[in-house]
Image (spheres, chains in turn cyan, purple):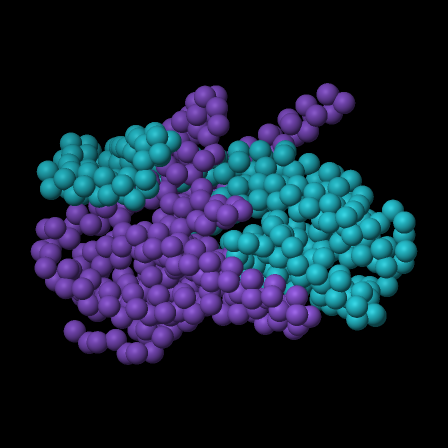
Length: 264
Length: 270
């Protein structure tokens, strides 16, 4: 093990720029090579061998950015073995391992972060925003980035220390259960938000209800009205109606009902 | 009505450039998410124009809606989602710059709501610009490839960092132009409306979160049983007091019970 912990940390920091040159040919190819370059420089003293390593890694690369440091760690561990003359490791093995790992981590990482963690934290933040909490953006940033930074920085050490066995380490997290649990949490928060934060008011209650019943009546009308609107919106969205068109239809609905005096 | 200082336009463009970098190119700590980008823009513009509380409040309102509207659009593989970061910055900037000087609440709200609706379209335009930048990066990638074949390895760093520069420049120019040309027409539109019409836009603003909630519900609901529980939950929360802690505790209880149930099921299978 020739790479220092500090150098691995620097590579993890460089991975923050992974997608700076995202493109349709190599996707994150330049970003990956840019990130691991200090590691390759350290492993290969010989200029020719180093250049060959650079060329090996200037190839198609695409994974979840937060999990990319795991692939970087594994790649550098394999490069080190190759340099030391390990017969089991050759450029083809390095390429295939990198390829398999980036594909599986793209699935796990995108599912966990984009599809589950971000919606959950965003919905939680929206609960605070709807209550007009000024620190809402800060709450979102802190909560969201705890697992992000954990995987980004711990990942490079896992990859480098465990090498091809890193998948055993990742399996302990039970990602599918975590994702489903986050989805349930998001739904519960959404069920709270819908009746409380769609503002729907009608003048009829004020005219027809006693004051002590008015607030309760207002809440019931708002809750049920919001439920109907969200149900219609959900059906339309699932029928692939564009969100811009749904917003426009809502605008027309609101203006017409306001004009008729049904909504205020 | 006073005209805006050039510094305001430049600050909006700068915020746009920075949050757009975060959305894909650099760091991705999610300051580009509407729930962060919109309040941040509102706070900075509000401070510059003398009413930071109003700016922040507008930012939170815009952030909630835009966060939900595109929550299902994911940056997976080749897919480029609508540019929610730029839409957030521009929605707050357009609405606040056009509306902050109006003394009437209704006129301000018209500016805010129309700014928000325009920004949804601008987010889609932002996606096209993002795709253009990625095509530009593809040319840079080919250039770097050529240089590597000529044994020039310094080009990797240069080519890679040029990519982030193009992203920033694209967002900077786009935001600058939209604010430069967009504020006055929005003010003009608001002036044309009478108070009776303006009230309708306040109703629209109140109902708009329903669109975002629909998108999120569509994304999360997977089975009929879940739909039934979900509707039951909405009715229950309609009857319960509107307290934030009730929603949060309920969510954590649901997660805890679901997680322990699935964990036990997994143990049982073993």
